[in-house]
Image (cartoon, rainbow, N blue to C red):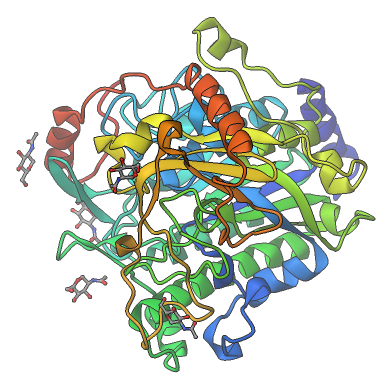
Length: 530
Ligand SMILES: *[C@@H]1O[C@H](CO)[C@@H](O)[C@H](O)[C@H]1NC(C)=O
Ligand SMILES: *[C@@H]1O[C@H](CO)[C@@H](O)[C@H](O)[C@H]1NC(C)=O
Ligand SMILES: *[C@@H]1O[C@H](CO)[C@@H](O)[C@H](O)[C@H]1NC(C)=O
Ligand SMILES: *[C@@H]1O[C@H](CO)[C@@H](O)[C@H](O)[C@H]1NC(C)=O
Ligand SMILES: *[C@@H]1O[C@H](CO)[C@@H](O)[C@H](O)[C@H]1NC(C)=O
């Protein structure tokens, strides 16, 4: 790995303008963006002027649309999975308070930025962290392999003051690498991150290092409202004004926030192109999970069922695409790729792109008895050199969630297992079991998604075999096959029971008062342990 750096140094001396031979990796992870909330998935019934993602649409036209990019059904597990290369079941399935010492990814697991840094990459993080913050030397982005970082630790904060209240404290949540950031309250938060992204790419030495940028947008997630202590959508005023033709407030705000995110995608692409970095770049854009379709969320996952918080396709089949010059020049592009990809698979895939010999392992984690990497390299699927995906089955959510786990009481209530093309859901009350219309939310019907529930209990003695769907033949999950295919349902259930023996669910500790004491004293959330 070191020799690339040395070679890069020589290249700088002898041939100004030669780019580093390794490919740049740019990951743009949006928050709670629904399937139908991007232009390239626009339902025909939705007027053209009520959705605006021209930059993503353009990348989708020339790149590879990922038709089956699966994530966890909500935030922290999804980020934990992407960065650790484990399925959430083997790293973290909770949206824990980050002041809990064990929140997020266990410190013994080696994260993707560490792997890429070792391979000679300049590594940068922006936006939502949400995988643990207690220890300065072990849990901050800096401690986990990023050369620079600017972001927040909680699930969200106020887009204007960057204030966040949780547990025992209320304080600003904005951290600049190894100290509180003074940028709180100076601009709209997404704009602050976007400007930092532009600066990073503008200043990046293309000869010395390839770049790995992981920008986890705040948009289009709701915010913590400093005034009310509740959450609400907080679009920036100019994009909000742009959509005066949308009569439904939540949808108008959400569309405006997605448009702001898209604007920033465009600004990043434009710098990469101007600096001639684009031709050597692989860019992944995805949502971290399905759309927040509930009241106050404003997102739309039409034609899928469910949404953010549950294991219906609307909650876990995220809008996503691959782009960058490297992808655009593949003979397999442009196209829609149907092969299954799990977000954990980027770990091995990007390691391969970075020239690391496969398979990737995590020796440090192994020594500590932590679960191994699950990631499989999907690059051959992307390039078209293989037709079928190596990713076929995985446990989605623990069985404990089917029977009223209080830590996830509002998070869907569904245990689930995927084995293509079948998916089994198990739970006595699975919430958000309905469908968005092509225009959602709308003013004709106000629909509280949590009022629509389904009983997918597992009770073979009563001929109840959960809920079973064929997600290829029936992507909208209208036809429950459990009673007609009880044998398939039983196989999937047994696989889930088997997977349960490897479910990683350590004691993560309690929210720590020291975090609040420090936040109260300094005005900023920050690590409170060495
Ligand atoms: C916070 O909530 C108050 C009361 O609803 C509202 O007036 C204010 O605009 C909200 N703040 C933001 C940034 O949306
Ligand atoms: C779901 O169905 C099972 C089996 O019929 C039943 O025992 C259980 O009470 C039902 N749960 C709810 C919440 O209706
Ligand atoms: C409006 O919303 C309702 C409730 O979600 C939905 O049933 C209906 O299909 C929507 N209308 C359109 C045109 O999408
Ligand atoms: C922090 O301040 C809040 C009120 O602003 C208070 O309720 C809480 O007890 C304080 N926590 C600590 C640990 O000082
Ligand atoms: C930033 O946060 C600090 C600590 O809470 C506060 O003292 C300061 O006034 C804030 N800055 C702005 C511009 O709001």
